[in-house]
Length: 466
Image (cartoon, rainbow, N blue to C red; front, side, top):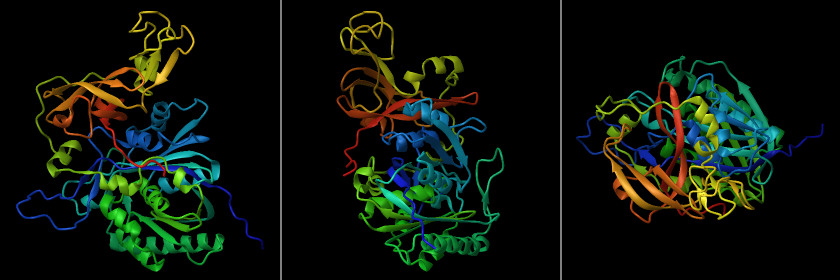
């Protein structure tokens, strides 16, 4: 029988790791920390799966649809992918949908390669303080869009096994976990079966890179050994923790970062069964990466103290300032001002060419009414531009889980002025003249409504693509 080789695959990809890492979770840190211990990637207090998905997807081309795969969506019932869609400024004709569950990351990759969709795999993992696997869980996002510029799909196989391994009831915050010694063998057998069938479909006996993602560390180690993996994927996992639905995407992105054109990759995700993909790396893999490589992001992180981490996650109840909570945003103005709130759009004056922020019918520079008056007028997004600080104020009465935050006024390169919170840097390090870039974040949550807007973070000099 003639073998049919798929001509679908990955057209572009990106990964996002937050700016912080937790390496020590001792409640009593009287002695030295364990040397060369594991670390976990930690999302900032103003990040969640939506904001991380936006960061991962923001420089990728649009797909035929938009998918958000996660186990920790900020809303139940409401489609969180719709917020990502709005922040990216996608055409309304692009459908947006959520995928839920620990296996949703592999499902999203399957749909990317099969349909040309764009997908963000994003998760924020939280355990009870001091849990045995606290440093083995982490936060991250990865994004992919269908095509063949980065990699071509050669083989695909799945193996479903109903197993009580890691679960969470509605309304609960932390996963419940069965003894991994019981589930490791089941997941390893499922993973091996899926990997063998995917390799057979690809007509390969071996591959150049083996990538294993599993919610069970014992199963992952066993599969790497059986499949003769180099362990490079395990090194990334040791620096990030298991990042839930994002994990297969994060490890695949790292493998694509390191692989050479023509090489082959086996991606195996063993969670509630197994999903296996075999890819051949394409000639355009270097230009297909949009943003920093995974290991560049790992090298750029800040170490986070355990007490600060507990405050960020709301796991430590501390007294805040005697100040009323911020008001909840209302649905009608959020809808009317979506261009400013979600896409950071200003209005360019057709008469003088200056940009007014927030957008207005009257130009703040020349006073002429009608934002579309004259040639060149209209809406312009500032989210991908650099802004330079012209003044800084430190707020010591913030309701955020930090002792103080920096509020800056910054001039945007090419026009426009922003007043915004600074993030991902100590407030005392923000100085006049500092270069910052916009990043989509959660400001606060009041009355069950998440208030998203754009903050400013330090501009990074990463190598993009090449």
